[in-house]
Image (cartoon, rainbow over all chains, first blue to last red):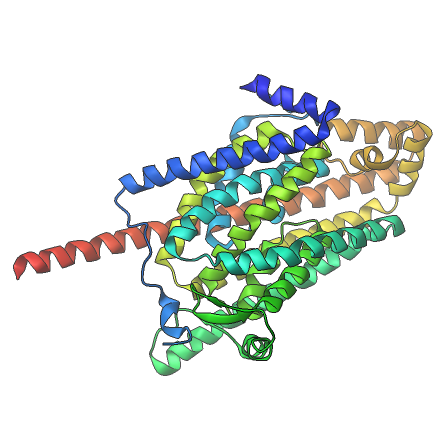
Length: 63
Length: 404
C-alpha cells in the first residue's frame, strides 16, 4: 500500500495532471467505499437511518 | 512513524486518525471542519502550511461523500440548490483567488485575510448566538419549544423579489419556490470569500443558506456538505496538480473522518436545528480566538521576515520555499531560522521575536484542538443521549402495545 503512495508522490514530480486526477479518484473511491461500509455497520446497531419527521417541517411554506 | 514523501515530514499515524475522527464528527454535524481545524493541527504536527491546506482539501473531498450520503438519507440535502450554487462558487473562488494573489503581491495578504476572517467569524458567532438566545426567550414567554427558525426578513424579501425573475424552481426538500439567481448569488459570494481566505467555504455557506435563502438549519448543513463534495474534489485536484497533497496523510485522516462523520451526521437526527446553531456559534468563537492569536504571532514576524527572506534570496532560496522556511514552526524549520538569524545575521532580538511567533502560533493551534475535542465530546454526548431516548420510547411503545 505504501508503495502506491510513493508512486503517486513520484508522479507529482513527473506527471502532475495524472497526480491531481489520482488524488481525486483515490479520495472519492475511498470515501464511497467507507460511506457504504459505515452505513452497513451503523445499520447493524438498529438505529433508524431513514427519512424521519423533522422539527422544521411544520414551519415550511404550504403547512 | 510515517514518512511523507512530498514534504519530507515524519509523524505518527494515530494523530492523523484522531484529527480525522474529530473533524469528521464536527464536520458531519454542522458542515465546518476543514480550514479551522485540520490546517492548524497539521501545521502543529510539522506540516508546512501549503501541504497542510492541500492535504486538508483532498481529505475533505472524501469526507464530504460520507457525510452527504447520510444527510441525503435523512432528507437534509437539496441537490438542486447545491448544483445551482456550484455555478457561482467556481467563478467566485477564481475571482477571490485572483484578489488573494494581488494582495500577496502587495504584501498585504496575511493581515487582510485574517481581518476578513475575524470579522466573518465574529459576525457568524453573533448571528447564531442571537438566534439561539431569542429562541430561548420566546420559549420562556410562550411556553412552547422553539426547535428551529426558518426564514427571516432578509430571506423572505429576497425570495419574494427574485421569485418573479425566471428561472425559478421548486425545492422539494424545503417546499419553497426559489430563484436560480439567489442560489448563484450565494455561490458567488461564498466562493469569493472562500477563494480570498483559502478555505473550503462551509463556514460562510451554512449561514448564507440560512440567512439569505431562508433554509432550515439541517437542510443548510446537508446541502453545504453535498456542494463540498464537488468543490473539495476540485480543490484536491488543483492542489494535487501542484504536487502539494500528502495522499497517505489524507487517506488516514479520511479513515478517521469516515467513522467520525457517521457519529456527527446521525447526531443531527436527535438534536434540533437551534442547538446546531448554538454549537456553530461556539465553534466560531474558538476559530476566532485562534485567528486573533495567529495575528498576534504575525506582528512578531515583522521585525525579521523581510530581512531573513533577503538572506535566503542571497542563498538562492526564493518564493514559496523562502516563505515555508520563515513561516515554519517545525524543528527542521527552526534549525534553519536559527542559522540565518543567529549565525548569519547575528540578531538575538529577531530570534526572540521568532520564538514569540512560534509560541502564539502553537497556542492558537492548541486552542482550536481543545475546542474541537470539546465540541466532539459534546456532539457524541448528545448522540448517545438521543439514541438512549429513542430506544426508551420504542420500549415504552412496545410495552404499551403489549399491555393493550
